[in-house]
Length: 107
Ligand code: FES
Image 1 (cartoon, rainbow, N blue to C red):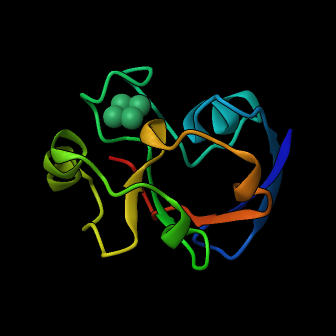
Image 2 (cartoon, protein in one colour; image 1 turned 120 degrees about the horizontal axis):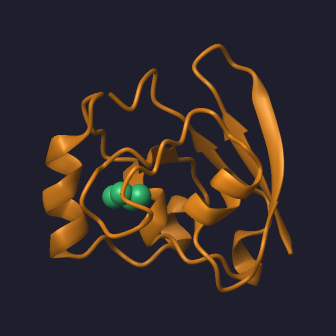
């Protein structure tokens, strides 16, 4: 398990645990993080699992593939260079302490 910090728009911080090999979205849903809707359950068709990944963790992630980049065009809040879809982030040991900001809305 690794620790993940979700930072909501009101600066409230939610600390959660995530299983190695599972996705960041799954960790958020399991922890009841309200800012992650994940309507498609990780099928990469909804863009309601949008997060902004803080450094230094962003640099540790593989680059978004073409499908993820395409879906980032459909986020409710405008995507930034730090934007990722949390269902595409696979947790590993190096991501312990991962900190992500939640957008103001997923709709
Ligand atoms: S959960 Fe739907 S795109 Fe990530």
